[in-house]
Length: 238
Image (cartoon, rainbow, N blue to C red; front, side):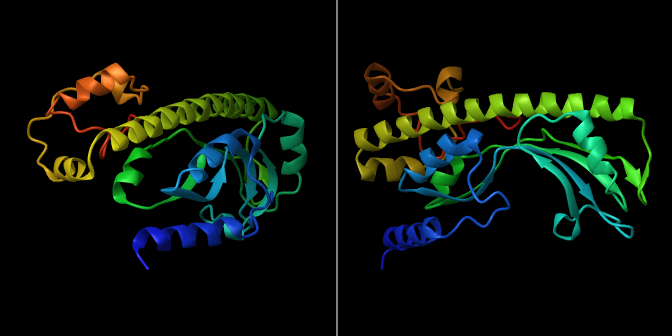
């Protein structure tokens, strides 16, 4: 069995399995993104989270956050309110930590060049201890302040998901046009060549801007630009 057929079989098996997440389904804000990836033959998702605010209790002897051994006091994929956090904190017996976690997306890719399209990094998170051995260590005013920050991060995270979806969609369209416009032999030759003569890319192209027929002809006449092969579409500080 060739690798492409093996990947298709693996993809079918994984996508046919039941969702074992706590929620049991894909988060609403990331459904279209998951569908976009799973609709392409070179990708499939293994897990995802659109972003969430969680309150974890590590227990009395907890020294670091390990979600497998924690008690989940509160979890929401939407903005939360102070009262919900205060009520949840009353159940804490150890070191409770309020966290905001941004989009998490685990994707299996058929080839390295497919994975490079998804090169994204984010440090958009929040993690603050609130109790120690069950005792509240901060004021309700500070908790309210933290919740406002977490909710702001949730809103920003949603905007980033939308930008990520749009950039990925444009990148995949660009890849499709490039693949159909260049013979496989030429693509392979360009992909294996050295990158000593690269020039600065047009910012619109670097952001995954959809390539029109006119722009595509320009690429065909440009020996220094490789047509969507192994291109990082998104900035490192996304």
